[in-house]
Image 1 (cartoon, one colour):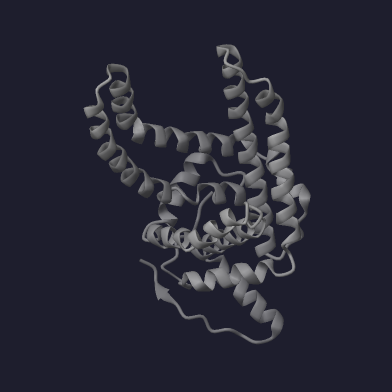
Image 2: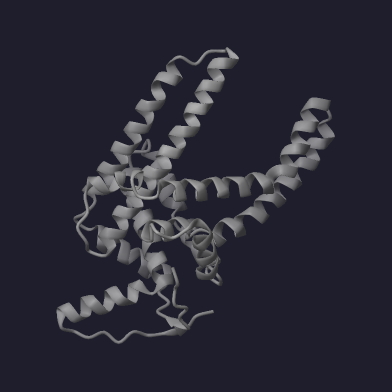
Length: 266
């Protein structure tokens, strides 16, 4: 799939992106909240038999961790389904609970391969810290642990820019199921050029909500997670220029033309 590179697009700030998310979710919280409950319940119920039979034997531990790995992959597809629902909500399209199962039949291999590639990237970056830590434990050399700490910090600082560079991979694959993972990684890298800090600040702006969700015994996440996801969708639409198209469509339907203010894309 070929994307048109634009020189200009509307640069909404994070406050405006959050406002768009709240506007989209007003009166529509029920479906994403129900989706969170249903997908969480399915994942936990599938893991429960393995958790109950877990003991100190090596074979049971292996079975448990293998089952956990596949349930994580299942959860990835559920998360992509929830994101698909949010994309349709933002576009004012018909959506429903069926959306959370959409990627079980629509190119799940591409989503899972992309997830495994990102996990592999993270492991590769943290490999020096892992090797030093394991060596320190096996040789009983505490001094090596002091070396592992700065290496671990350095690994985090190296990994974060890479993760934010490819932060739009899943949105692209969800929005364009026919796209191959390699193309999604390339397009995400292009879209995020000059925008990684904006997304980082957007994520940081939800730290207060994160603490509130924890203090509410995690019940608050039923409202916080849809708000966060819808804000990320608005960010993705800002990068692709679709926020402008939706604003113009809304203005045309209301009969009040809107004059956008453009800024140079850097």
